[in-house]
Image (tube, rainbow, N blue to C red):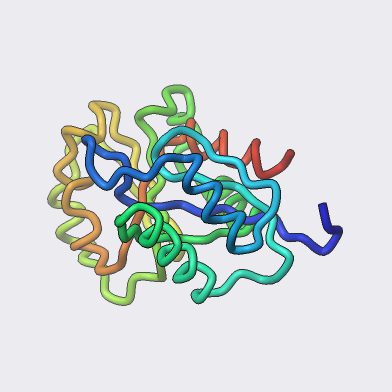
Length: 182
């Protein structure tokens, strides 16, 4: 592996959900390798990839990954790229440390950009009495003890924030960090 390589994480939104927008992980690996990335590894089928990049990642890098997946699979995913340091910052920023005890109930919505005019009052109104949430410039944390599938807030969050998001449960976030640190 080149010494100047940077660890990067790609999070693809909306693939392999409910039998739609199918992107085999082997195909995702091939797409990333064809773009010049090394040591590409994926985690579960929901579009999580860790790899090394010989150069700094930019918005054009995300666009190139989207185009490669679109060409290979006919799927047009939104791709968010993070450095290991950015991922670790999101992990360290978790305001719900007690929520990690049941990592399937704690979710991080990674934000494509910082929301300029989030509808905070509407977020509070939609939040269930058992739910806790916190917005930061790069992430929205949602602890949903009754499950995210029942959360009215989770269903409306992207619209209320006004920016694209992609969510991962805490178990997935920790596994991605583990892979990126190897």
